[in-house]
Length: 401
Image 1 (cartoon, rainbow, N blue to C red):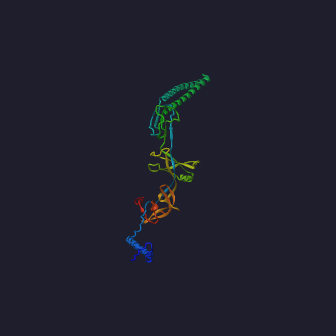
Image 2 (tube, one colour):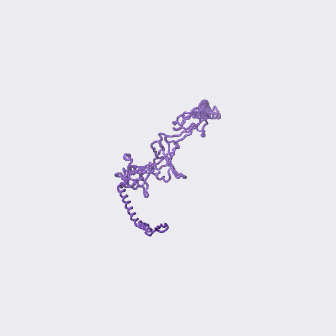
Image 3 (cartoon, helix red, strand yellow):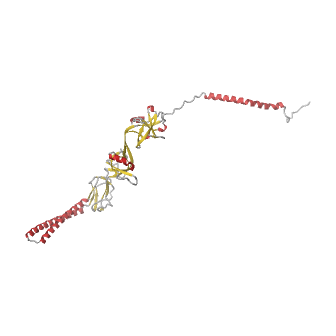
């Protein structure tokens, strides 16, 4: 019996070798079909998944919140602002007119003193003694003058009778005239002594506020020592305020001054602004600064103004009658012109072009298509779209204004 063992190294029959290649050819031909089926199944799945979710409704932006003000019609004074300096009407350095010991003071430092009030007392005893001596000398010389006048009359009678010489007459007349002159000199000495005695009591020359006491009682003070005053008194009522404006404003200053409309306004803080008419305009322009000085006198009833104090000062240089006034923040700057947002019916905002005439830092005078009583947007303009509605946050406050 013949048995054949297959040789593993011998190639297989051709039918067996050809079957894998044939399978690969068939697989490549089916790949596009399978890919298309997969895409169809994926699309069906996605359509089924998303078809159950409804699209969200479109979002409507809320109306932007704004703050409004109300346009008003009123008369406005155009002000020119500057830094003012408070200047006292009078400042006095009190000094002694006689030399002597300072006995006492009649005020407290910083006190308001009245004109004529006793503020210092110098020792009067030496001056009282000098006055008594002057009066005694006057009395003696008056007695001598009476005797001399009698001798003069006597010699005049004798010379008429030829009983006296002309020399004797002349001597009598000269002696009488000399004694009369001595009496007049004594009277002047008495007046001087009385003045010196009066100078020992020092009275305030003005009504004002005292400064620090510079010499204490017990010290010897000398007469007319301007280098060492006893005290300085400054008048506070009334008081002046000085301010400077550029020379370009001088024509308007002169016009308002001639019409008696040049009013200075102060806002020193801590109360209502105060006003006073300008009563002084400088007679020349400062060559270094190109400015002219203006001054006004204020009553200063509450002592709010203090010499040397700086204040915010302004004067009225223009008048704007029946002007349209809006809050300053309502005026916006655009690429071509200024504009405001006006809130109309149904709170719809519209943009209107305006011209800025005057701005005082709080309110603005404008011209344009804005009428009194219309509402203008003061805050929140960045989010406003013309033609859209806005949400008014201060409707009650605007209605009261």
